[in-house]
Amino acid sequence: MLKTNNIQIEKIKLAGTNISAILEDPEVQPEKYYFLKDRLTTYKFYINSEYSIKSEINYDESSKLLSIGIDIIIPDHYIPDDTKKANEILMDPINMFQIFYDAQNKIYDRKHLKKY
Image 1 (tube, rainbow, N blue to C red):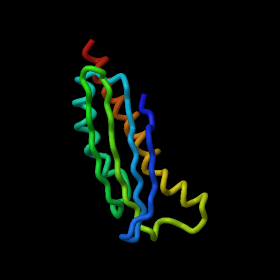
Image 2 (cartoon, one colour):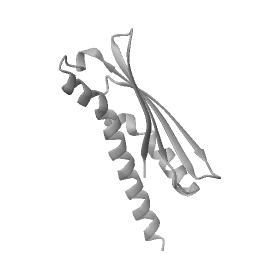
Image 3 (tube, rainbow, N blue to C red):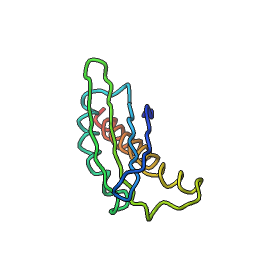
Image 4 (cartoon, rainbow, N blue to C red):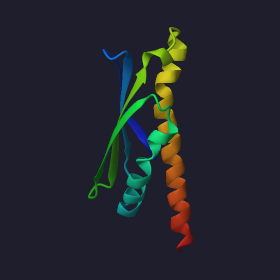
């Protein structure tokens, strides 16, 4: 289960807002990590092409902890003045990532179950 460990939102000088998040999944087997690592590189295709995204995936095999760091820059012209709507837009890429991650886990589980 993916848990959000830390989210930071900050206005940057380049006319955008940076969202940084660290997400962790504490129960990942090595085979699943390699599958997810490959699949997670495609996440950028699921968000607005004007957003800038960088991600870093780390795995500690001894503790089976998968850690994913994501930095997304959203151009200011996408962020409305209304605070509630702005928060929704800023959190949308992180929420979407969690949905994407869950879907990739289900795909892996279905493939893995077919082997047995």
